[in-house]
Each structure stands twice: as C-alpha cells, then as structure tokens.
Length: 213
Ligand SMILES: CC(C)(COP(=O)(O)OP(=O)(O)OC[C@H]1O[C@@H](n2cnc3c(N)ncnc32)[C@H](O)[C@@H]1OP(=O)(O)O)[C@@H](O)C(=O)NCCC(=O)NCCS
Image (tube, rainbow, N blue to C red; front, side, top):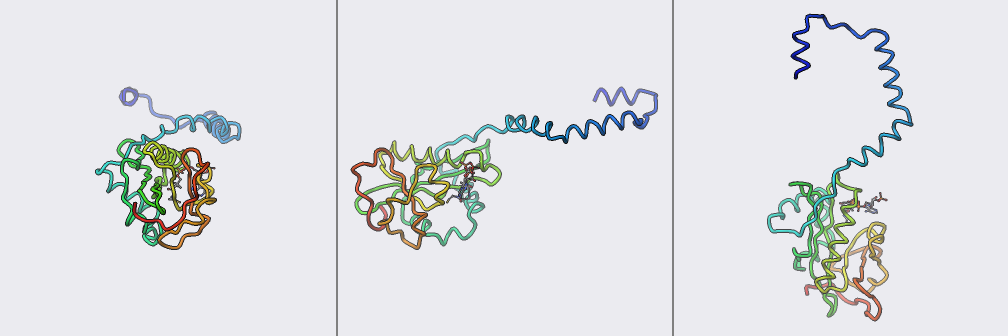
C-alpha cells in the first residue's frame, strides 16, 4: 500500500525494463526450472502440507455430510452391493464409527455395524470413504485402525468387511478365514475379509449366514 502511495507521488516516469533486466529474468527463470531447483523445492512443499485431519466419533449431526461424502466416493452403484444389504438389517454403532474433519469440512468416514455369524457377534466395517482431495495422506488407514481399536475396546473379537485386499491386507485383514461365511448377496470371496482383534489361536472359524445380532 505504502509503496503504491510513494510511487504515485514519485514524479519520475516508469521505464520499461532494459536488456540487462530481461537477461537477469531469463537466467532466474531457467534456474527455477532446473532439476536441482525442482528437487530442492519439493521437500519444502511437502513439509508445509496441511496437518492430519481430526478424527472423532460420529454424532447424529454428521449424518447429512456422511451421506454426501459416501455418495461422492461410491456413486449410485453402492446400493446394489451385498454390504448395503447387511447395513439394512445390522444396527449402526455410531460409537464405533468415526469422522475425519479438516476444520468444518468432513474429509473421511468409517462406519461400523454389529452383526452375527452363527452365535458369534462381531463388527461389520463400512462404508469407508475419504474425500478425493484428501486421499493418500494416511487418513483411510488411520480411520480403519481407529475403528478396529474401538471395536476391540468394546469387546469384539473380529471385524468383517468387503473390500480390496491390497488396501485392507496392509491393515491386517485377510480372506483366509471367511470361506464359510454367507453374505446376503453375491460377493467375490477374495474380497470378503476378516481381521481378528487380539490372539487368533483357539478361535473356531466363523461359519454361517451374516444376520442381525
Ligand atoms: C480407499 C480409500 C478410503 C483410501 O483412503 P486414503 O486416505 O487415500 O488411504 P491412505 O492414505 O491410508 O492409503 C493410500 C494408499 O492406499 C492405496 N489404495 C487406495 N485405495 C486402494 C484400493 N482400492 N486398492 C488398493 N490400494 C488402494 C493408495 O494407492 C495408497 O497407496 P500408497 O500409500 O502406496 O501411495 C479412498 O481411496 C476412498 O475413499 N476410495 C473410494 C471408496 C472406497 O473404495 N472405499 C473402500 C471400500 S473397498
């Protein structure tokens, strides 16, 4: 502001940059685009990335924002999935469901419901969704880890879900012990994944239809 005011009071006319200034600008411009400068600048931009989102249990006020995030992440095809059939009868556990917030903006969600397989009660995880603009910063993995820890603290021994093995395998889920679980709709058996919370020894494999608890 002050510079503009001073300039306005300066009676000298503005002059176009001379050839020396043009050469200096061309040199600076070239050096900014050099591989060395690009490499030097990349860690700086990484280090000023926004802080991780704040993860909190779901509250009743979050329902609208969750629905809109899940709709953006999965599209209308989500209603045809077997997981959706489970969610129709399995009671949601908001206390075991979590939202990731960047300020007032919902950027991630993981929901969990209670189910039974035979006489065992366990947790069904899903949907899990992270806003496209906030992906690949670890929010998805953190949401799953927090959800599983909460399920374990609530006394559950297993978490079941339908998902991509490369993503959920890294978080301790596997299809090894799900071969005898019957979902209420068609599911690729390689995508029906279970995580055992705590020691797995001595636990009989889950067997039978997924039902309401
Ligand atoms: C899956 C999802 C929740 C991951 O969220 P995120 O915050 O990006 O997850 P993270 O940052 O913890 O992990 C990202 C890593 O997982 C990988 N990844 C993400 N989705 C994957 C998938 N479906 N299959 C395999 N790998 C996947 C990414 O490539 C990335 O790998 P990298 O660390 O080697 O770069 C998010 O991509 C999403 O909302 N997708 C649409 C909905 C969906 O598919 N939900 C999961 C139900 S199966």
